[in-house]
Image 1 (tube, rainbow, N blue to C red):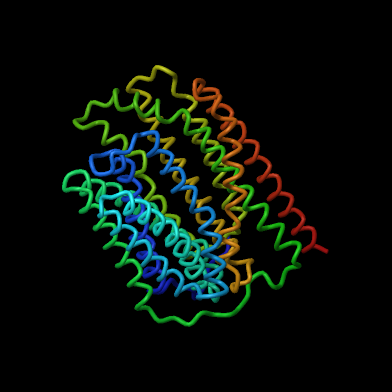
Image 2: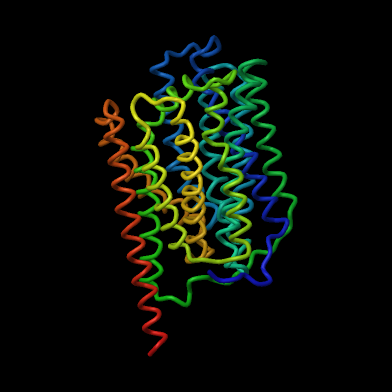
Length: 406
């Protein structure tokens, strides 16, 4: 681990992280409300039709992100594209207040279009802040990733509460207002984009190999996470039934994510002062995920109160794993991609992950009636990848030592 000297986060880091936090709060708030809204008295859509519309809505972001990344890199510029995209999302949220089919489809379409412009370009713009400070890339994106998680959590609670208790229009208007604030922050900031290219000291084939391997690894991680998730809903119900606290269900649902913030803060602080390579962090992430799955596998099908501590330990360990996986892919892409095409590459890089998750989802559909088998398969897969990465790092370290000796 290498000590980081004379590199610090600046105010622009927190401006863009806050922008992303507010945008995610707005988006996940709308996402939480939209199916309830479509099946309610305003639109009166059947649940089956509403779920079809929702699937098209969420799936549309795959294409819109690619288009938005290309437009941001080649036409508008990343900063202008994210502002335009945020404005479209705000207008889309306000359009949902019409309570008509036209308002519904126009609103969802604008949110998809705006999200495609906003998301890859704000991520690329954030990454470019660190081009002169490459050792802080991991900690910078850990801040960004933490903001995303906090925003999505707060958005579901806040906008979901407002929409369900004060009316759909209040919920959607709140989301639109948050979206406008989110783009006001970067719009008012003044920063000159650096032009230094990272990764230009490596041969092109090595750069491509690093990016492809990292993208595939992250895709595999989330595909295995889908297997892990087959066991979790049933386990959470059992944990809720065992809890003796008032409002236990809400408590245990919250505690599942409660460790992430302190764990991520610890990672941010550590990585701001000490640097280790991205593949080292990925290895740690996979190893901790395997340990988390191992702990979960110790909880029997009919748990008792003594198993609650195992549940808490597994959640905490998985949060450690996630902070070592989630931010690192964006960090690696920023470090090894030409900044002129960063938003485009970031939008394209997640396609393999979608494909891997889709393929795993098709396979895992047969496992929903066998959650313990799904958990064991996830444990084996995560363990195999962890061991492979550890062997790779040890061989790399041994090779570097031999080279240094000669």
